[in-house]
Length: 106
Length: 472
Image 1 (cartoon, rainbow over the protein chains, first blue to last red):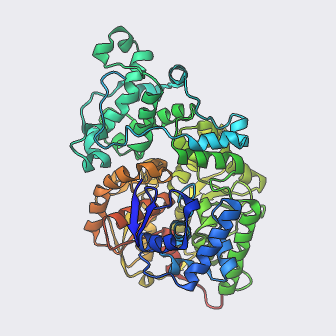
Image 2 (image 1 turned 60 degrees about the vertical axis):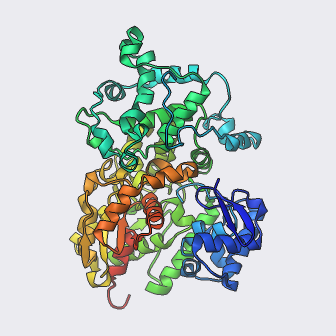
Image 3 (image 1 turned 180 degrees about the horizontal axis):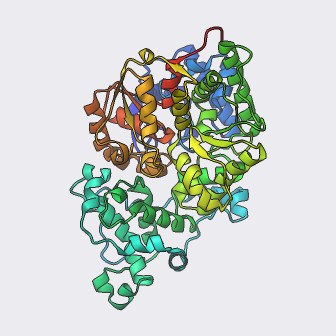
């Protein structure tokens, strides 16, 4: 599997850039993934609100949340999620939050 | 197998990974327990494979298995071969020969009498079956471009799907395909969206729609006696409901009578990708039954390539259902609305140059070719074709379920070279497609080859061009 090396971290990801070992996720890794996969130089408090919600949801249910839940929890309108994460909720936000690749046509 | 060719791409020799299957067995998943979903057991799989092969070969398959004259025309129609012209294992004929030689050895008389002459062969063990899996799942997007260019009428993609079906029956299947099939069997939709989550998202979309268009606007669920039963791709409800909002705006403007069903709304169908006709039948039947239950007059499929092919064409056969209602794509409905003057559009709102990518399952396998073009010419100021186009267009790279199989991504992107050149030559800013797989396939190609383009769908462009009547 490919390795992303940055900021002194060695992160193993799958062919699509999702974490190979989701349980090893840290906030430092999120920053590296955001830069490498989404081209985001910095994660703002708004990014973190989405990322932390997804992380918590995943910890509880081993599942990626619906975008509805992301908006409900953060109070952001739908379009805001796309502004924050250019690749969208699944390939952008869930990836930065260290989830494995969601199953299906995504 | 005798005379083993090592593939330079590296894909064909990838090992079998059945971790997801072991986990599903351990969890006692219902679909595994009752045998709808098969899991891999090491051992005597070759015998079972040969038995299934002999039993399932139909007449059209036998034609494709025997009619090939090895002329090589298919090679230049395949985007894998065009991207890797020095790699013989990328030609459709080589890929088809991997199943063809087993057929010749075990079913056809030529290979039994003179195996050396018929180039017949037999799999040695599970390792060979796994190599076959990597060929039919990993090195072919089942786009059927070679089929259309074969002078002998050999349908290589049909052979690929057939072989996928045999392997799926043995659990020799990519993890992604296994997981999605499991979810579709167990929850009726490929992303395991619960009914509560489905209804909650629709309610949220409805609130937003009413905020824009007033209290008369609606996204109905399970309303009986409507003209249209609208069915969607689960990613629309789970991750990207913008397309549902676009459809709802347009239906509202056209004064359409429509509804989503609360069960039977997933028009995608992994049976098409895995070759499992039983799954294909189950999923398509859910839709046909929903239409009957709600007494809808037609089933309309949102923009999705394989969903369109499965629901509109293949599902009728798989399910054996006496399906009399018309089934059509939302794009055909949009075209009708424009023709009948039920919606008014302003192409001045889509000024960027737009090109159109034909989804394989819609153009080649679905015969829906001119309708999207007629719509785009009405809603865009600058529509331009890419070349080749229509039934001769190249795959987005994501066909055949490849987007759900991350392990084959490097080869898939390499094979995207032709698509990237095609896109670049149009100098368009937007590439429009009516398939969710193509959105991601094209998106990956655009990112990988650094193209200055964005992918859009027909609904998005129509919704943007839509002129709403004053006061609404």
